Length: 258
Image (cartoon, rainbow, N blue to C red; front, side, top):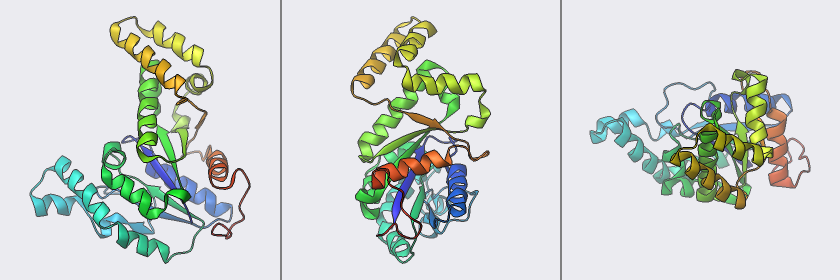
């Protein structure tokens, strides 16, 4: 079974994309399971096959430990790691091609705590990849774009997994906005120019220098626009997974474990 972690900031569309990609895989004849790792979510656009809330629930943590929402989320993230073996036991009893892992809405609760590394190791680092969703509301201007790429690079560095970038909710953008954002990934001179054009204050200069440092490290790569609503980009996600797991060769449905 191959694991695909969906990661991004709150509201970037992780859960809806998980649901859309699951439907797309079903249509292609692949079996896919969904694992919900968000102990604080109230509603989901899919029916999870495995749900962390069976073992850890943020509302219950608040009541048991007398904590507010933020403190409860931190404790719940650590309790998740303590219960990871129970989840893997359930998942390992199920045979499927892919496991789609919907991570907590708060990026820092998953990516920047030790429990995240434990989770990746438990499910198998060698059979895992990461999809990082960039929210278009953050990427509309050059500064926000570099901020989003910085977050993406930090998550990749932290988890040490092959990472594929996605511009989510692309259906909400005009053609001009979408082309401009995606163009920044392929035309770095244009991004640098737009950064300097945006403003000449010290903060922008720092952002431009950060951009140059990230560019020298090879952080920027190709990013695809996706839309869960219009099922755009599903084939590109599949192609990225095949490149990661099989070097670009297509695996036949039911033959993933082989």
